[in-house]
Length: 269
Image 1 (cartoon, rainbow, N blue to C red):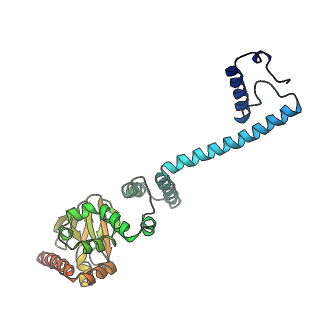
Image 2 (image 1 turned 120 degrees about the horizontal axis):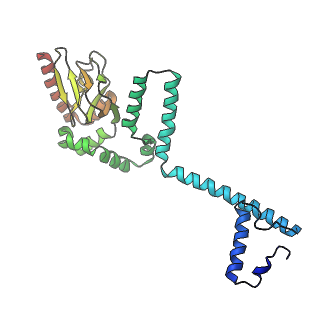
């Protein structure tokens, strides 16, 4: 053929196949039409066909490679996309710099660079698997809390499945005195101060709980609670609190004992 390279006709098959591979890759990687321009119409059409096939394969490779890289850490990408929206929101409302910094720090401590739709994931699992995951995630809370350590395992599981994870920053008022109480809190990690009218502070740390007095008395908060450090807490709503304790009345008495002791101490201040 007219496009044959004369000096290759008598060369070894290795050199011939190497040249043929080079020519094919030149077409298919869209670098050009190879070392020599096609001369006959057959060469022209074959070259165009190979270039079209090569362009398609190249585009598919880039697309698959991009999708693979994005899927390697989709939770981090989801967090970054979410935080970009938060930054745009802060900019739109022209929030002051210190508020923006606190929001940034909150996201860093709350999500730690990764974001999951945990509620949806757990909702798709069977009840045994869901309970196993929740028990594992809350293992430190259970280990540090005497209330759970000595309780019926079924009660512990019932409580854990209704807890909601929350994060508070130093100086945040988790509870304000005089407000209607709708939640109680279990401390997984951190230190809080209970502030009474007499300006007396009581410190609570890992394994403690607070806010149960309001849920038992259905009254208003008797003291304020302030976060002294970054606090990782689990909250329990009043409806879930009463639902669980209806099934385990003995545990209601345990909560009432602690609540009465705390009320006595507040009354002494």
